[in-house]
Length: 105
Length: 155
Image 1 (cartoon, one colour):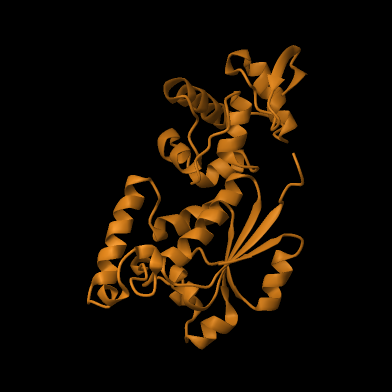
Image 2 (tube, chains in turn orange, purple):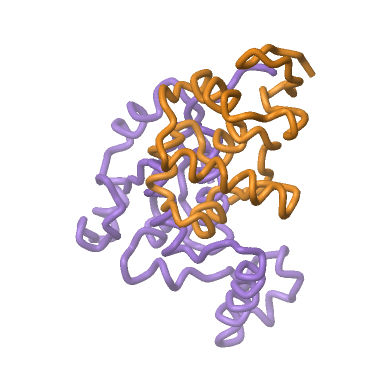
């Protein structure tokens, strides 16, 4: 675990760069985490997925893997990969400040 | 964290359910991790991208110790279909897609899907026999070009 200053806030990150405490998350942190993942600006569609991830985490204790994310968020798989090319569920979860989803499919 | 895998090229050479799924799951899982992925179907693996066959891929009921069933029973008519049906029910319950949906999904992740040229000729297939998601029919040499700089997995 490391501590990093993101958007002016000291946050704890795990070894893959995920927020350890989702409660520390803010929208400004999301914007900076997105930059670090090579996403220059977050569109409304990005935010739709990010908020959905946070809602799912609050309700179920985990974010969905890609297939479930596409089915439940209403954003198709193809578009998810356009929004988050380095892995939709993984990167959206990281930007949303929740743990990495652990499904295989 | 150690060195990261950047690209995988996965060869699917078998036409049974248990022969096809591991390659699909690994390709899809690679894309989910942001890893570049290619799938190359060869020999009986071509059935998994064949329009009229991909929805009829079956579990091997004979010579398959994993079935925990005497091979003698496996030769009974319909046994392979029954075993396949049982496994598909379990897959549904575990939210694993059927092969047609899985192939569409994998193409949508940006994974390249290719057919092996010599196998296509061997079985007398043409491009029209394959699902639309197949990008190209390529030679083994072209496969190695696409696989350059990454890991190759043979299944």
